[in-house]
Image (cartoon, rainbow, N blue to C red):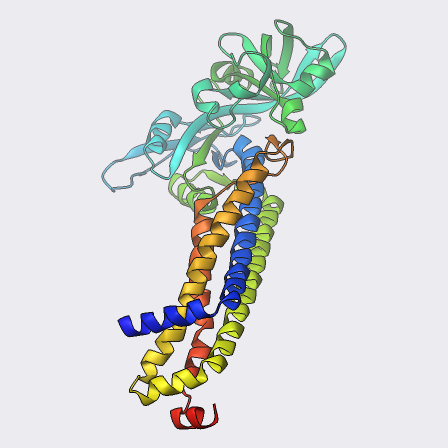
Amino acid sequence: MRFEVSIALRYFRSGGMQSVLTILGVSVGVAVSIFIACLIGGVQEGLITRIIGSLAAVSLEPKESVPRSMGKVFSADGKESLLLERVEKSGQRAARIGEWKPLVEHLDRDPAITVVSPTASGAGFVIKGNQVLPITFRGVIPERANKITDLRTRMVAGIYDVSGQNCVVGVELAKELGISLKDKIRTRSGKGVELVFTVMGIFDVGINEINLRSFYVSLTNAQRLLELVGYINAIEMKVLEIYEANTIADRLGAVTGLKSQSWMRQQKEFLSAIQAQNGSNALIRTFMMLAVAFGIASVLVVSVVQKSREIGILKSMGARTRSIMLIFMIQGLLTGLIGSLVGTAFGVSLCWALMQIPGDNMTSPGQLFPIKIIPLYIIQAIVAAVVVGVVASIAPARRAAKLDPVEVIRYG
């Protein structure tokens, strides 16, 4: 192996400007691959944070049904038994989840779930003077709900306080009604229950529908308004892996008997856009690596022609076919490795420089370009370039190995 490496290094150095240009070609391919991957990755992460970050990844809701009471075993190890749900419906009474506290405690222990937030929500109206606007009451436990939709950091006025008879409202609703902090607001639920709340905060989550319709109050007050005292009608969750939401939702739905929802099913158009971006990213990077492969292969083919007499001499001196192949495969490996390292340095530097340009965009406030340096993409680019370098050298190496030393020495 030492012999093959020594000869490969000698051929590599003797390539001169040819080797330099090949390395530069690989470097540009790797740098562009890293830049595109980090740009698309930054856009995706920003979109997911902006859109999905304000929503539950998985939710459980009661099924509409006739009055019944049902208990099931819900245990990862098969030893623990819990009464999970009681879904009731009678006349105009809305579907509800009973015995929800043991379920929430168990979901808290599920390793695939990071946040669990029980909620009571329903339609109602906010009344101010002659104005009556439809709203959705959102009864929450603040410390849990804030991990689903982080309202504390999105308050444009006041504080996130839904204790007692306090509430927080969206910025669009505040504009429609001319609401300011400390104002008293009369509300009425679809059940005809009326309560008066004090506005303690105004939030902006960047989604007009939520800013206009969502009306956050304590879980207790929402239960009173919606005639759900002692019950809830949804459990919202965040999960460790957002693209596993469908699997987790199906599992929880099957075990609990509740209606399960996932963001991947509710946001199909958004998911399709993300998948299209991933496909475009993979396609562009594949073509870049193919261009790199053809560049390396063409240079090595020329090298075989230039070094054919030397190869013939080596074979006549006893060099094995395997050794000749290894010499050119090592050249391809060196080209891919050096080119990938230079390209990585350039690509990461370019991404970092563009990240420093101030500006604003839809996904990354404060940056002109929504770029995020993701180590996985860098590692993938390096590995791809090295593999491409070796694979591209196989054909020239086979050609070199098949040279007849007598013919080459005689005719050059």
